[in-house]
Amino acid sequence: MNQFRRRTSFTERKKPSMGRLFRPSESNDKKSEGIPEAKEPEISEEKDSVRLAAESSDDSEISSVVGWGRVKQFVQKLGKTPDSQSLSLSHCDLTATDAVELGTLLPFLTQLEVMDLSWNDLLGGSLKALSVHMQHVSKLKVLKLSGCRLTAQDLGALGETLHYVPLLEMLDLSWNAGIGGGNLHLLTEHLHSTSSLRELHLLDCQLSETDSVALAEALLLLPCLELLDLSNNKLLWRALENISSSLSSTPQLKTLKMSKCGLNQESLAILGEKMKFLVGLEHLDVSCNKECGGGFGAMASSLSFLTHLKCLDLHMCCLTEEDAQTLVQVVPALSELSELDLSCNKSIGAAVQSLFPVLPRSKMKRLHLSNCSLSPEACHALAAVMPSLSQLQSLSLSWNKSVGENLQQFVERLHVECKLEELKLSSCDLNTDDLLHLQSACKRGALSNLKLLDVSYNGRVGDAGWVSLFREAGGLKQLQELDVSLRPDACLSASAWTAAMTDALPQLSSLRRVSMQRWTLGSEERQKLEKSLKKRNVVLESDEVSVQNVAG
View 1 (cartoon, rainbow, N blue to C red):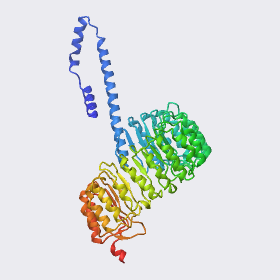
View 2: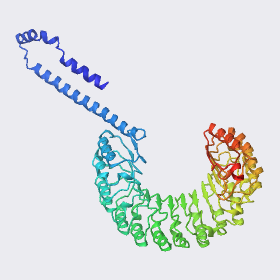
View 3: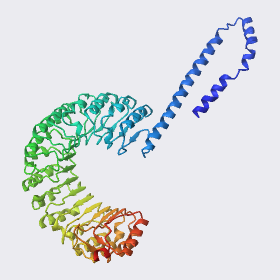
């Protein structure tokens, strides 16, 4: 339409105006009346001015349309959907040449707010070609460059463009080893106290002690920071001391992730001293720090200040019984706690039973206790509080053998209004009776909201147990994922219960994935099952071991 309007106005300008044929006589009349002719050239000039402005506007519109066409062509070529506000090109194998072309397209993306170029490792060393055009995307709020093999040169180029994107709220540079090794200052030295940055992701960037100094100085200039992710960076105690010294300058910090950072007892003491200043903290992740065991006592007083804490992740920290007792003392002060992960801490199996009664049970949504060597007493204590865990959505008890033969205690106490969406019971030594109790819970509607059920690696369950579970499939209408796999070294026939599973599929309308590794089937049984699953768009994960192959 723009091109059509422009062509029309141009044609009209070329046609002789009929008014001009009479203009000389009109002019003579005006002269005789003493009316000056000087006004006509002014009108003509005004029309010319309007015409030029219109041409300029049309040219701009046409340029914009053509430019957006180039953007669409570039994005669609990469198998993505064009969007003027969000440019998602992650995992597209972008090259340095693509970076140059993308840079020339930024002038046509003035409304861009999100740009994700993550996991394009060929972009490393070519970010300058893109950053020189960043002034055209001044509304950018999210920039993701994780896994791009960024170099020191890239980091410097990015730093120089920060003033072009004053509204930037999230910067993700994770999984770029080139950021570490003393290079982080090339970015941070360009930060200003007026920065709007709310999230800084530096996961696995191989940060050094020198980088920790640069980060500490940067934190002083980021009063709006709400999330800091330093996971997978080996932070020695001096580096941690540098960073911790500036945490008090980030009063808005809500999420602190330091998983797998090599923290030890001394590190926890250093972190604990500054933790009391983070009164607004809602998410604390210090998981996978295996040398932390026995050191949480030093953080007890500081943790009690975190009254807004909602998520505490301590999985795989080699917690001791003393650490468990520390949690028993601290948790009553954490009235907002809704997520607690203590998985893979095998030494707290007996001590953790004292923790369950002091949990803020009306707030708990996720409770993960897999591979904690729970004692029978701990199982009884947890089962006793199950009725009051009214908001619980995810419960993981996998790899706790004591759950076997005791599942009845858990499922019988579940209310019909239960909001449980994930139940993980892998390798719990369940038997047929346990599955019958699970069937009973399904029948009375206590698992009607369940979306994920993991009962894998429970070889003691007999055929009757599996048949009973599928017989009450009507109570699992929301189920999306089901895992009934056996251990890698096991091999059993599923012929006795696959018919019950096939019959149950019409009732499992939400089912999207079934995993039944190491179960054997006859060729005809497998074909029938696969046909039924495919008809309902359900993905089957199986290693396709047939009965005949096993017999052979």
